[in-house]
Image 1 (cartoon, helix red, strand yellow):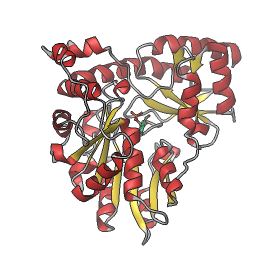
Image 2 (image 1 turned 45 degrees about the vertical axis):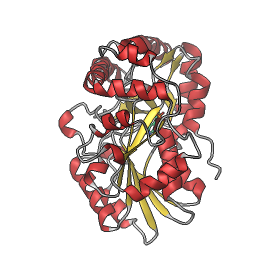
Image 3 (image 1 turned 90 degrees about the horizontal axis):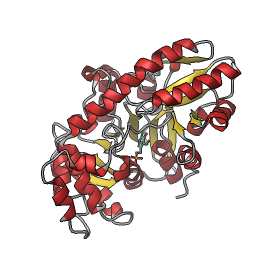
Length: 371
Ligand SMILES: Cc1ncc(COP(=O)(O)O)c(C=O)c1O
């Protein structure tokens, strides 16, 4: 199995640690180890006393317990942890899919959500989101494209890169389509809890559906990407067993300090999520008028969740050229839609970081000088 290069990760590999103003990141502002440990009496001493041996292959019990509390119907034994969400995607696809299977994947998408299936030799139908409908993909398309050999529906909501979140009724249609056709539903929920209106939060696929697999991670809403701590929650024990067996060939078990810190963080998950949402909302108060001021050049469907949005460049401007010029001249990093294989007229903007105001100031000077 040889997947094509992961374009987004290659792009970030070039710029993430050299460009000074990151205006396209999807993870929220992080905190230090000592800040995290200060959340809880005794947490620092516990870390110092931690023994650095292997941990349980499916994830430490304490961590799986905290993860299971994020769901309604999930027990610690319904959870497997991974080195980030990325390992969870890779292993799920390899455990469940075979050459010749058909999958339907919401698109545009974080590349591994369709690339791994393609590399396995699956037939992949891209379920395109419609910008003119507020990025809502057409539920009829999904239902009509289910075939005899369809094995899985793969979705991501809240969505990277648009900040779209499925309306509840559409999510219901997806679950029903999966159930009626006995399909896996792989639901990438890594931006869950970052809904701007908590009333729009969707149920987790794992809670709702027997073949629903919910993907979660510490990186986004909790701002702890450096822990490389992710998980899959699902009630389908047989498939979890297959997933667990494949993990024996990748990381075997998670890093003990990461597991410890992730468990501390999840015991204070509300505090971390409130902090991330606070940063996002404050940033949107600046970003909204910025977009308004530059409406001759930019157009966007304002995100309803997550820390990212997808901006359209008007007048046929190439996103690749535009992003390159911006980063070369100002050090402000945007992300062109070409890394999503989605044309050359959009760029991703990220608004989960504390220095967004400075990034926008630099960007605005560039716009004044060039447009
Ligand atoms: C939709 C989506 N899924 C999965 C991942 C992978 O998360 P992690 O880098 O924490 O493994 C990302 C990261 O950007 C993402 O946006």
